[in-house]
Every structure is written in C-alpha cells, then in structure tokens.
Length: 446
Ligand SMILES: *[C@@H]1O[C@H](CO)[C@@H](O)[C@H](O)[C@H]1NC(C)=O
Ligand SMILES: *[C@@H]1O[C@H](CO)[C@@H](O)[C@H](O)[C@H]1NC(C)=O
Picture 1: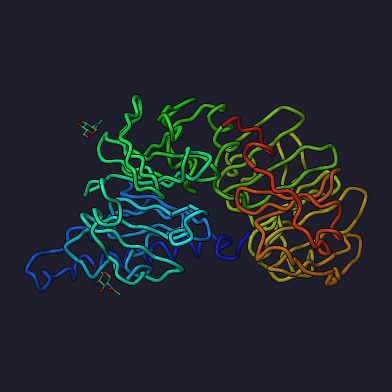
Picture 2: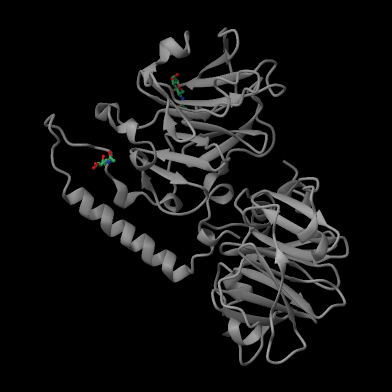
C-alpha cells in the first residue's frame, strides 16, 4: 500500500482532529468579505465524509484518483480529510461568488487530443479546463461557448468515450434532464433516463458509470440510463473508507467487501488456499467458494483495524501494523499468540511501516516490500537477517501482494497482476495482464 495510506490509526485520528480544529478556527474567523457578505460554504468542521453526505460533483483526476467535491472543499481518493478546493485549483476561487463546483469530469476522447485528459469544472455559468494541474489559457469560459446547447447551473457531468457511447460524448445532468454532447460534432441529444434518480455528481470509474444522489449511488447504463441490479447503494460502503455504521446482514458485509472499490490494505493466501483480504475495519475471507466477512475488531481484536501487511506461515497469520507484528493461529476463533505483538524489527529485522509481505508455499522466506525495495527474510534464522532481494520496477508503489500456487499476485488499487515467482516480479520487463480485483478475485458480479 502507499505510504500515505498506511498512516497509523492514531496519527490519522490526530490529523483529523487537527483538521477539525483548524476548520473550527476557520469558521470563527469567517469575517464578511470585501463584498460585505459571508461565505456560506465554510462548514469544513462538519465535513466528515463518513457521516454521510451528498456530493456536489465527482470526477477522477488525470491519474484516475477520484475527487469528491462538497461546497468549497474537496476529498481526494477514498479516504482522508477534506481540503479546500482552491488549494489544488486556485483559479476556481477567483470567482468567489461562484460558490461550489456544480459538475466535473475528466475528458476521455482519444480522437480529440485538444481535450483528451483535461479536467473540466462547471461553476454556475462558467467552465474551467485544467490540463496537468494548470488552468488553460482563456478559461474560465461561458458554458454556452464551449458546450453550446448545454444549460448553466448543471447538476452533474460524466465523460462517455467510445465504445461506451456511440461517439465520444459527455453526459450532462441538470435535475432530471439529460444531455448527450458529442465531443466532435458538438451535437446535443436530449435523453430521458427513466427510473434514474437526479444525480448531483457522476463519474466513470473502472469502465462503469455511477450517479451519486444523497449519500447513495446507482450504477447506470450511459446510453439508456437503465439501472440494473440492487441500487441505490450506500456511497460509504463502496467508495469511502469508513468504520462500520448501521446494522448489516452478513450477506451485506460480504457483498460490500467483494465489490468495494476502496484499495485493500493487505491480503494473504494460506497453505490450503484460503484467502484473507483486509480493508480498513473489515476483512473478507474465502475458502473454496465460501465467503465470510466481519470486522477486524471482532476476529482480530488486538489489532483493531487497518493493518499494513499480512502473510501466512505455518498455520499462522503474521499481521504487520506500523512497527509491530501480531501473530494469530488460524482457527475458529483465531487466537493471538502470547508474547505478541512484538516489534517488527525484532521479528523481521525491518523498520516499519511496510507495504506488503508474503511467503510462497514450501519456503521459509518472507518477501517484504517497503516502498520499492523487496527484502528477503529467512523465517528460520535468529536473529532475523533481512537481505535486499531487489526492487519493484514496474510500479510506483503497490498496495499489497500475496503468493499462492499460481505465483505472486500484486494488487494496486482496483487491479491486480500475477507473476510466476518473486524473482519474475522483480525482473519482468513487460507488465502482465491487468485483472480486476472486485470481479475476478472476489467474484463481485457487478
Ligand atoms: C482558498 O479559499 C479560502 C476560503 O474560501 C480562502 O480563505 C483562501 O485564501 C483561499 N486560498 C487561495 C490560495 O486562494
Ligand atoms: C428531479 O429534478 C426535477 C427537475 O428537473 C424535479 O422536478 C424533481 O422533483 C427532482 N426529483 C427529485 C426526486 O428530487
């Protein structure tokens, strides 16, 4: 997992406390501006996305990281505190009266290189176009100039490239009015999306289309507006990393963990092929075709939540969190070994935090990944003597990895890649086929 995502819980709490203090200060100091009126959007102190909120706009950035807009704030990625939108997009502020972002999308139109990968923001009557984090010359412009036929004061927008839509298009939402805008010809098609809620935000993520409304979302067909399957669903379950809330049935827990788009913290596969996947406060286990999901607190009480790396070794789960190792004997229930947690330095000879760790069957070697470096630790040796084995060359960072009969599975965000062995993982020149975590690894059916 990326370093920023492995913040120890206490640090994360401190940060969020600090953030809320900061925001409270901010509110108190909120004096009337030079136009004589107060900014009304400064409710930063209340901006806890895990409390459930309706977003004004949702889009992915150039790297595919989701941005959730609320008032004059912005949430980046699936967890973490709100930032002021103007810290990232300062020009959005030059028009103070414009208030919040109404709609946003990332243009995906390979055939229109002028616009491809630009981020568009809609505020009242204006549109802002950013490319590589810079406002483009001449922007903001009137929406009617750039997107003729599209109304002001939009509710949501999402790109719809070919072949999802017949032509490279942008779908605009205003109340229950839907407009398909052809990027090349600028032709506008008004549509009716019957049975779809009014979206306040929409985005395309992992080739699917999501409409956000209230604190829920629905997946929809971009051409017909049809919603298939059990929607709406709770945004916090699938796109936010939040502690558990509300009463849920076991099936709902399992479904959420199978289908969540939030990155995994850790995963491991044990000798008999059972897989355990950890994400935030929850875990999912798979044995054969049997799934089980629960809170980490209930099955691994000493650990509480948010583990950095887990590997399986001789019937035990070695769970690494910050600079400590917890060891559980696998069973019903899992039992925490006496004498643990122990310092990571003592058990593996490495300073935490680490990103991933795995043991391949029939070996006594733990492969520990920290940043780009892969260490090899002989679990039979005392004291532990980690050896630098090599480095990850194909990715900037990884979230987690496991080793099983098929080889090493490396997970990054919603994707995974399989290498025949740790050595091949480090030496490979070609990135192997990309697979989807929720669908292909966990069997999510949507
Ligand atoms: C960003 O917005 C906040 C609140 O609206 C304001 O106090 C701050 O000066 C702005 N920062 C920039 C860089 O414009
Ligand atoms: C959806 O938007 C339309 C206006 O376009 C409005 O009349 C209708 O009440 C809205 N529906 C809901 C459920 O908010």
